[in-house]
Image (cartoon, rainbow, N blue to C red; front, side, top):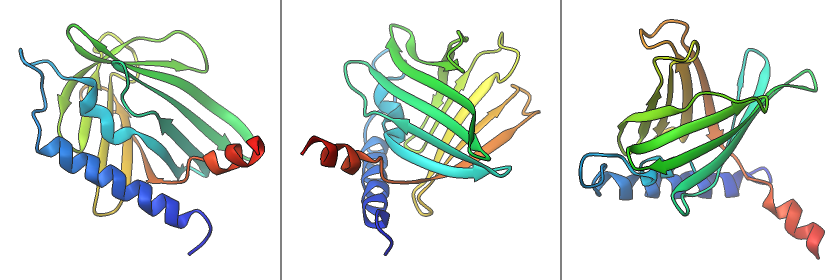
Amino acid sequence: MPIGSEKAARSAKWIAAACLALSTSGHAAAGGTFTIDNAAFLAGCWQGEAGGANIRETYTAPQAGSMLGNSQVVSKGKTDFFEFIRLVQTPDGVEYRPLPNAKSAASFKLVKASATEVVFENAANDFPQRILYAFDAGKGLLTARIEKLDGSKSESFPMKAVPCGGEVHTRALR
């Protein structure tokens, strides 16, 4: 196994266990709203390729009603796109709040959740209007998809669990 593959496999197994735990618990809080725990399966580091570019996303585990994430797209040794992401528990449910290229952006409301999928929507946003994350535990694959509400202009980004790189940081602290 290449270095890091064992850690990536452990991450994928942890995520699968988290999905199983979510599938046996209620998906909505009392009153029918979703909770930040519906997105817990996103926690970890994910990497894939699309159109010749390397895509990497990372998410923290839910804590204090939020999750923090980031996304980076690298092509030909240059960062073509980056995004800071906050998933936030609100009185009305959960919101996905991206800051693409560090610019302000719209909020997307969690409208559908299962143990392996979350769907966020904002009809007033030009593009995307829907952001979907689906996890396939059998393949260890997380797919991010953005699209219009009618399904047009759909773009998919499949990613596998990868080590988060913490081992580098801990070595630097010694």
